[in-house]
Amino acid sequence: MTPPLVHLEGIERRFGSVVALAGANLELREGEVHGVLGANGAGKSTLFNVLGGLLRPDAGRIEVEGKTVTLSSPRDAWRHGIGLVHQHFTLVPRLTVLENLALGTRGSAGRPDSVRRAVGGIIDRTGLVVPLDSRVEDLGVGDRQRVEILKALLRDPRVLVLDEPTAALTPEEANGLFDLLRDLAGDGRAVALVAHKIDEVLGVSHRLTVLREGVTVLTCARDETTEREIVRAMVGRAEADAATLGLSGRAARTRKDARGAMGDPEPQQGGPDYASVATLVGVRVAGRGGPGLIGVDLSVGTGEIVGIAGVDGNGQRELAAVLAGRLEPEEGTVHIPEAVGFISQDRSREGLVGDFDLTENVALAFQRKAAFRNGSLLRWKALAEAAEEIRRRHDVQAPSVRTLASSLSGGNQQRVIVGRELEMAEALLVAENPTRGLDIAAASFVHDELQRLAAEGVAVALISTDLDEVLALSHRVIAIARGRLEEVEEGRRTREGVGALMLRGDKRDG
Image (cartoon, rainbow, N blue to C red; front, side):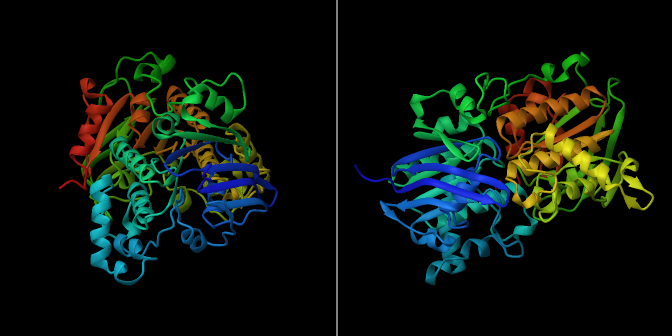
C-alpha cells in the first residue's frame, strides 16, 4: 500500500504547564480532503504548526512519503511540499498585498508582473478577490484571510493545510474554496481542512480526524460517521447533540426564538418597542483600504439585537469603532453610552495583549469600573477574582488566570474577550464577529449570552460576516455595502435575500 504523504504519530507538545498535544496522530493521503475537528484548545492549530515547521514537537515522529523527517522551520516544510494557511495571519502589514504574495518566490517568478498574472489565475479559479495594491494594514480580517490562502496556493504545495480558512469568508466564497480543495485533491494532493462548522467539513472531506484534549480520538471515512457522533467525540459526553450545541453552519433558531421570553411584537426601526440607546445620524468616516462609512443613520434600542451583515471590508470596522466610541466621525452625530462592551473581530491587534496574563487583560477593560479601583490604584485581587469567574463561566482552557494570553489557542483567546466584554456591556454591546474561531459549544453559549443581554435590556449591535448568525439572532437585519446601510425587509430576511444585498454592493465588484 502506498504510504500516506504525511504521517504524524504520537506528537506531544507542551507550553509550560499547558499540555497542547498529548499523543496526536494524523495521516494525510494524496487525492483526499481530510477534515480535522475538535473543540477550542483540542490541539488542532498546534498539530499543524508542528507539521508546518513552526514548532518542534517534544515527542513523536513525522514522516513525509514514508521517510522520517525533521521540520525545524517553515522553509523545511516548504522543501517537503507542505503549505500552511494560518489561523493567525503571518503577513507584513506595511507591504502591499502583491508584495506579500511575492515574498518567498525566486527569480523571474517573483517579479511583480509575474506574481500579478499568477495570482490573477488563482483568483479567477477561486473567486477570492483582494485589492492587490493595497497595504495589508489597511485591510479587514476577511481580506487578510484571502491573502493568506492565495499566498499558499501560489506556491503550489503537494500538501495543503488550511486552519479555519472560512471564518471570514462569505458563503459563496467558501463554496468556491471547497470546489478548489476538491480539485486540488483530484490532482493528487493531500488537503487538510481545520474548521468548526461540522457541515462544512462533512460536505467536502473524504476522511475525518477528531482531536480532544491533545489526543486523536476518532479517525474514519466520511461515510462511516454522523454529525452527532462527531460532536460526541469532540466534547466527550454522550448527551452531545449537534442540533443543540450551536448553529453548525445553519440557522438553528428563528428570530422569534431569539426574542425568547420577551414576547415583543416585531420591532421596527424607530418604533415604540425599543428606547434608543445608540444613535448615528449622517455619520461619515473615510476608510483605509475600503469605503468607510457614507452618511450612515442607525439606531439600536434597549433590549434589541440589530444584526448588520456584509462582505468584509465594506465599512464594518469603521461602524464597529464608531459605535464602540473608539473612532470619531468626520461628519455626523453619535450618541452612545459612556461604557460600551466591544468584542473586536481582531483579537490579536485589538482584543488582547499576548504578553499579559488573563488578569491583566481583564484589567484593560475593567480598570474604568469603580468596583476595581481604590483611588488611583487598581484592586488586583478583585480583578483576579473577576478573571477567574470569566475563565470558569466561559470554560477558558488555561491553568490559571496567571497564564499568558499568547499561550492560549485562538478559540480560548476569543472566549476571554467575549467574557470580559459581556461584563462590560451595561447598556450597549458591539459584537463584531463574536464567534469567529469558536467551536460549536462555545458559539452556542455566546449566542445564548447575547440573547440574555437583550432580554435584560442591553442593546446589542451584532456585526457579522456569518449570515446564519445574523439571521438566527437578530430582531432587525441590516445589510452593509460600500459604506451604506440598508434595512432588510421582512420578506427578504433569508440567506439568499440578504446575501444578494451584500454582494450587490461588494467593494470588490467591477
